[in-house]
Image (cartoon, rainbow, N blue to C red; front, side, top):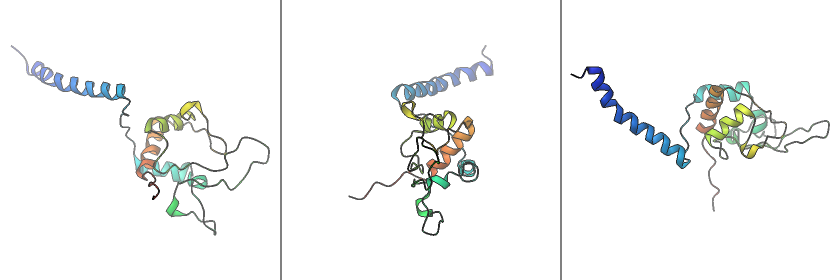
Length: 151
């Protein structure tokens, strides 16, 4: 005679098998698996801790942030005092238009961009933990990708 627990296991097994098959299919086809983060916490990390807007948002003539171009990249308004590699402008990070979620998490946790590249100063090589990185990615994704230029 089958117990209730045995019946439950037998009923749950097909569902588990389908879920596992879906995960394996996504990983084989290159379809990225969704990453979950807290955009509100990411907002705090980006704007209050990392202060990303200081370099990634252009300023108006009065030195105020241009809120209509928030985190859309800007010229770096200062230079190093000694010769060194230096980025003349910051990247457009609102919506993360050039990185997948996994690439962004890898960058934020290791400092490494796709192709084993590293950012040029003044961009720091961040070493966030996984949770912080997921939260930052969730916030930046929530800002939406840039609109395609009108033709």
